Image (cartoon, rainbow, N blue to C red; front, side):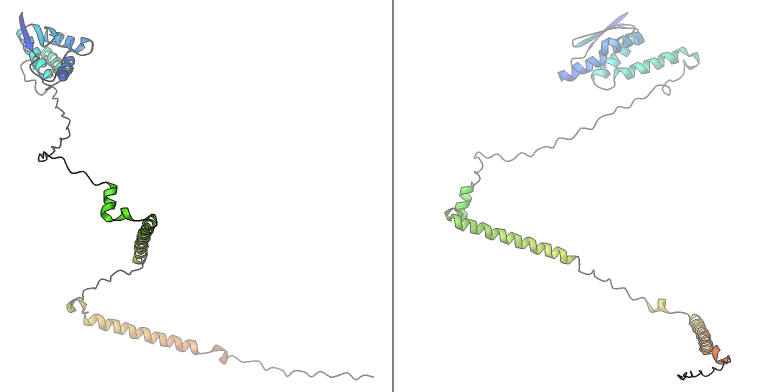
Length: 250
């Protein structure tokens, strides 16, 4: 029976983080601590800034590894417990007792959440004198001479500024409306090389012959349509109209 006392207070400086990680080691209702005791075969007590453990040398070595990894935020105790459970099941199989267990054990990757980098503010040069006070509305009016104007002149000036803004806005709207009717620029097509535009002489001759044949056929059709078939038919002689005799009155 051996004993080991592990100092955990000096592993982390932040007190709040230390309390949270120590609670991870204990677990809800001391369930994590009991699981560690069962799997390692050691008695473990967490008190203040130390962790006391009693048991076999192999079990104490496992307890120290679990405690240090938990406080230094290397690995959560739950992952160590899963690994110890796998080792216990593999040890029961005599065929795998002498083999390497790394291929059977689970591999947990640590997931670090990327925090936003704090932008370092450039320090401005130190000046013993305070910055100059910004000019007030009255100071600006005194500089422009508006302070000494009468109410009638002020209103006339405001009206003039308003008219200028309206004229600028109207001109801009007119320009936008007229822009829709401006035709786009025509892209000048590049003149193709004369070698590309040449057509074979045989193709030209064939096209000319086909056009001549079409012209002959068209002239024949027009000649046939001009012949009137009624000229060859015999027309019946029309009888002269009979004269009406007037009846004499008796």
